[in-house]
Length: 148
View 1 (tube, rainbow, N blue to C red):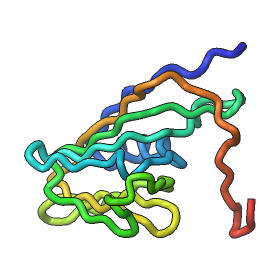
View 2: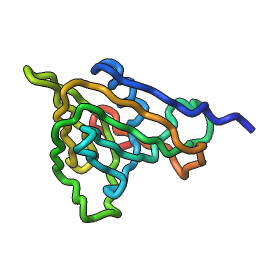
View 3: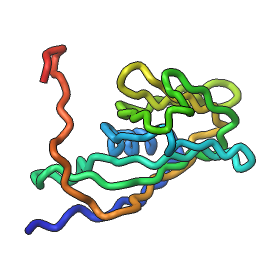
View 4: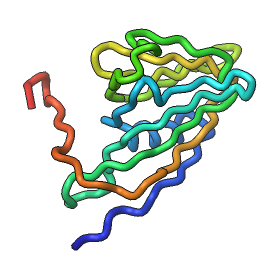
C-alpha cells in the first residue's frame, strides 16, 4: 500500500502565496454550513473537503482542511445561501485584486457562486485537519471548451 501524502500546513502573506493555496484547494467542496465570518477577529474561515492533488498516481484522495483569511473587513456572497446549510459549493479558484485601501479576495465556485472578501492585506493559512480517504473519482476538467 502506498503512503498518502503528508498533511499540509501552509501560510500565505501575499497574492503569490495565496495562488499556491488556491491550487491546493482547486475542486474542494464546501458546505454553506462550514463558512463563517468572525467579524470581531476580522477573520473569515471555512472547512473544505479538498482533493489531494499532491497524491500523484495514487488512487484519488480527499481530506478535510481548514482555511482562514485574516484582516477581513467585509464579506459579500453571491449564489451562496447561508440558510441552506446543506448547499455544497465546488471551489474553482481564488483571485485577488489590490486597490488603494486593501485587497479583494474572490473565492470563485462552480455555478457562478462567489464569496468576496474585502481585506486589509492578503494574510491567512490552510491546515489539513484529517487523514486522507479514498474518493470515488478524481475531478475532471474540460480542455479547450470540450467536455471531459
